[in-house]
Image 1 (tube, rainbow, N blue to C red):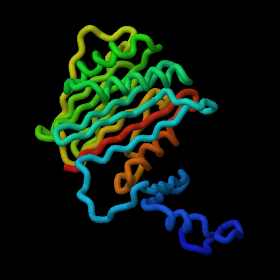
Image 2: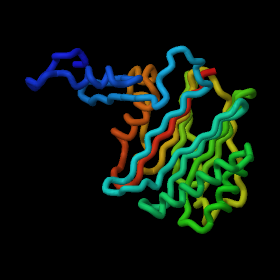
Image 3: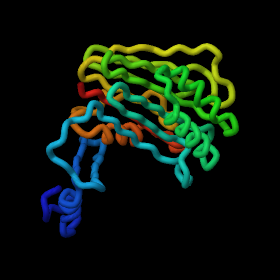
Amino acid sequence: MVRDGESSKSTLGLGLGAMKRLCDTFQVYSLKNWGTIILCRKYVTGFKLHIKPPIAEIRSVVIPKPGETKCGDRFFYIENKNHIKLFLADGLGHGAEAARAVQEAGIAFSSCQELDPPEILRYINSAVRKTRGLVGMVAIFDIAQKTWNICGVGNITTKINGPTASKNYLSYNGIIGLNLPRIMSGQHIVHEKGQYMVMCSDGLRSRWDTLKYTGILRCDLTILAASLIKDFTRATDDSSVAICKINT
């Protein structure tokens, strides 16, 4: 159907071909009796063919509750030569006040110099006390040690899938900005080649799985994030999926 002139509705059949020509990245993922997801990406500064592959592929899809103009879910990340820091935040409820809570949390996350997820959560907790609060998950990847350290508060679902094992990681009960647990500790995970981490807010049903999507890891991870939202979103709250795959 990407070929010009192909049409099932007696049209010119130029739409997908034009999308492919206009974009720097064009990917199609489709399964029989399931549907199709198309990824189009245009780079503002131009697309460079000969660039060094990044240490990690980090992608997210974040959408507001239907009918809302502001989203109470946000994803933030920081990369440097030593660490990769991820933070998925979900403000209580939805709308403008939830969006303000996660915005303040993101500012605190970006300014925090700590490398221990529980300490980062405590820092964010102090910064968002005047908001309605939020739940969130922090994950830190140590590039030299090749290990993850993760810790979360509230109903953020985190799963690490790898060639030898897949495991869900539970968060502590509580609300960041209102009642943070007094004692928290991070969970350490050794990285293995081919492993990837998925974090989802409670805008998705909890029993999601990535294994049903045959061959999807050959595509940009944005397509996997969009597929999870397509199949598992509740449509009664903001929805967010963040995925990280280490390439080293």
